[in-house]
Length: 190
Image (cartoon, rainbow, N blue to C red; front, side, top):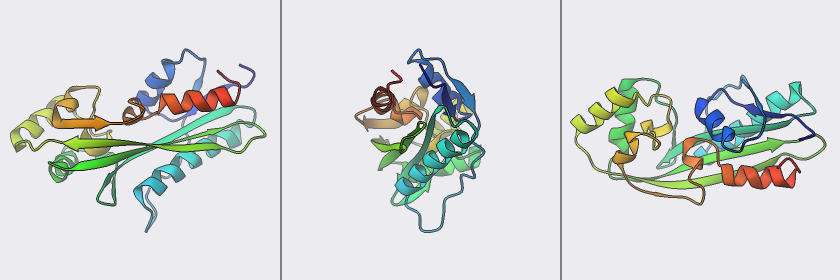
């Protein structure tokens, strides 16, 4: 690969997903404020953040191909992000019960001398109606406080859902590998 590849993220989930491609890469924190702007839709929020993350790292490494990604769950136009703790996670899960939400995973790839490649992959997630004791047991076992909507589909969080619909199953974990490989092929990096 002529240009180094950098993942602009500290997410272990994104790192693990990128490792699947078998490409050498490094990881760097983008140090971007992830607060949603007033009036910003969930899809605009994650698109902006993915772009800002990639740009922040690309500014320090102008010869690199930089991957930025962000994810948000859309609950009736409100962005649900990482709950951070038990109380917020339980509140998110209770609000999502019996509803179908959109999970948006934005991807931005920068490369020297080219305009950023940006896309958003949508995943439809249908939550089951479950009693509080089931939700509490899940939260105590998995502690999904760093997962949007408090659900980790790669663990027992999958039992809280009745359906997932997406063109890219890795998008829901945090990095849409199908779209990323399209971008890397376009850049000659794969």
